[in-house]
Image (cartoon, rainbow, N blue to C red; front, side, top):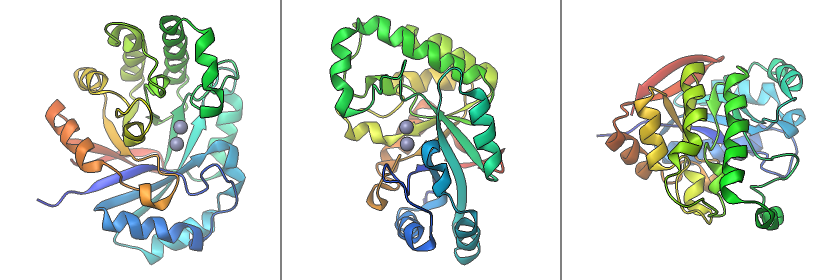
Amino acid sequence: MSVDYVDYHVHALGHKGGQYSEELLIPYIHRARGQGIRELGFADHDEYIAGIDEASIASLKTRFTDLNVKLGLEVSYRPGREEEIKAAARRFPFDFLIGSVHDLDSWMFDHPDYRFGYSSWDIAELYRKYYSVLEKLALCGLFDIVGHLDVIKVFGYQPEGDLLPFAEPALQAISRAGLVVEANTAGLHKPCAEIYPSKELLARCFELNIPVTLGSDAHIESEVGRDFAYARELLYQIGYRRLTTFVQRRRGSILL
Ligand SMILES: [Zn+2]
Ligand SMILES: [Zn+2]
């Protein structure tokens, strides 16, 4: 059986910045085609929003009709940024917005350079803090997709015992808000060596009727669609049968 994937989390500007051009984006499209991807969603960090070029995206949509090119944005959510985020969402006709938590009180906890910050935290307290911000992200109503839901585990710091109770209030909020969660395969290549969110959390998402989509969090073209066969199998085992898609922030789905 042939499988159609979507990759809704691709950084063409990575952490370098610069500008979208067809020349920059086309290698990602070629890579996506080779990976069985039907929809490719560019979703750069909102700090590089000035580098997005709508004309390049529009041109690629007409040049590559066998693959749906989508324009998204990965927004760093922080409580208090809501107005700024609304303004960013209006700048381009985005197909979807991913909301992600990358920092807590200006500590970039997912960045290797600031890893030392974990030593000053009680890890259980840190998880409560992270998930309280994620709950606010869900409740703010500005996003379509929750990015790398349990990224607080990135460097392998985890409290003892069951992790589900830490995430449960945020998962409830995500479910009530009707948000989609991405299965993000980048975690498999981080020190935590696990998909975001974990199998346990994905299973809870399924119980709470939270739809899923798929993202590689590629920062270079060779990472597009990475480990999607694994992710698909995992989602299928859990019970998922569809992946959510977006056009102009309206939702559709394809068979998983
Ligand atoms: Zn991110
Ligand atoms: Zn990302």
